[in-house]
Length: 211
Image (cartoon, rainbow, N blue to C red; front, side, top):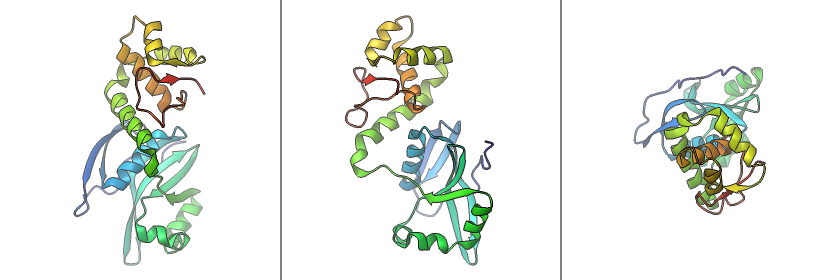
């Protein structure tokens, strides 16, 4: 599916907002995000293999005397969505909030675009969130050094669960950092998992397997 939105429509920094500059792996470009809500939502999108594309602040919505920026546009399992990082008032309003934007809902219905509040990590998911932060950092820095052949070979080896240390021994002619990044690339793509991912920081001893 061709992406409907590829660049942000709103680029001005909102008053009193915090700015975060990140690299979006799935968008393959740098992103500027404002405030912690969109930052966390972006990390969830990176951690969700079924999301294949996203664009930050793709649309500025004007209805009457009100304006609202859609926080993300995504393609998930071949379907388009607009995501909103909800304020407390919007969360409390629930479905009534969406009903208060009839122009938006009509346009999305006509174009078969879903609308929902942006996902966030639960408070108890701190370890998983930290692991995904590490994955995004390492892939942003090193994934260009990892060949598709190595990724395929590592995935084949993970038919039997192995640690990163064991994989580094098997691929001893390859830099261990590159082997590790190949594993993290597979995790990012949903092609490798670890039963300990939500409980322990990523380490060379962590066991990974093909799902």
